[in-house]
Structures are given as structure tokens and as C-alpha cells.
Picture: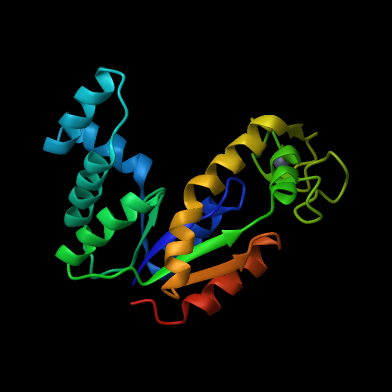
Amino acid sequence: MNIIFLAPPAAGKGTYSTLLKEKYGFSHISAGDVLREQVALGSEVGNKVKDIMAKGEMVNDELMAELIETKLKSIDISKPFMLDGYPRKLNQVKDYENILQKLNLNVDKVLYINIDKETGLKRILGRVTCPKCNKGYNTLTGYMAPKVDGICDDCKTPLVSRSDDTKEAYEKRYDIYLNETQSVLDYYKEKGKVIEVDGTKDPDSVFKEIEILLGDKNG
Ligand SMILES: [Zn+2]
């Protein structure tokens, strides 16, 4: 099984991709990581990217497709994998489908974790962490709150706020993401491949829903 993973900022993509990886053996292919990895490896496509970035130019669709194809050819595609951060627009969808066709694959599912802007904002702004044991909490979401306000459950250390985003920055990131991915979502909705999960619930319930919707057998 291969899936495209779509989720607005703060929807919990990191959490769920880790769980899918641990429980079902999904490879997690992040477009940003692939780019950095190929540059570091000095592969043919990596060197092209390096030249382009040195000129201060953007990596175009063609090169992005080449990166993704190189990566997919380097992994065992008989095992489940999820693609994250690609494709982000309709042109890239066409490119990606061409790549998959060469590998005798189809997009199986598009997993969309839906979260509204307001809930996403609470997640971002409510983030607090224990500076001693690194345990994370959230004071605004209604779950993941510490038992005693401002104090770590485990080691009783005062918690510190660790929001690296402002309200404005988050809202901007959110709007850009939605704008960019809407056409991808619409395309796959029409094909009946989109699994939409309500990402505003607590992470355990969200992941259970993902498991049910993806089906038990992920091979
Ligand atoms: Zn602690």
C-alpha cells in the first residue's frame, strides 16, 4: 500500500506517521528530506539540485519528480510507504502518477487529517514542555493538559512555553498549505481515494480512526 499524506500544520502528521511506521512498517518519505538526502549523497539529481540552490533558484517540478523517482527506486516498494510534502499541486500529481506507472503502482489512498485553523492555533500556542524530562503538554486543547497547572506530572518541574510560532505566522502557514493542496485533494476526492479523518480529536482516537479507515491489512 502507498499513501499520500496530507495534513495542515499542527494536525499531528509527525505523530501519526511515526505510529504508521512503527505499527505497520510504512516508510515515511518526506519531500524535504529526500531533497536534503540526495544533495548530501551527491547523486546525479542531488548535484543538479545543489547547483540550482547555489544560484538561489527554486527546485522546479521536473527536478522534484526526478528526486522522488530516484528515492522510490532506492527503497523496497513492495512494502507500504507514505509520501509527505509531495505532490503539492496538480502538475506534480501528473508527474507522480507517471512515476508510479513506471513502477507498476497506483496511489492507493490519500490520507487527509482535517483540522480547522482555530484548533490548530490552540495546539501551537498551548504547547508547553518540561525543561527537565522533555515531556510535552498542551494547556489549550482540553487533552494533554498537566494534572496541576504549569507543573510536570512526572518530575514536578515548572513547565515552559515552547511555541515557536506566532498566531499570524501559523495562520499564514495554514492558509498557504490549504491553498496549495486543495487541487490535489479535489483530484483524488473525485477518484474516491481520499480518507478524511477528523484531526481535532485527541491523538489516540484519531489514530484509531486512521487504522479503521486504512483497513487492517496494509500490505
Ligand atoms: Zn518533567
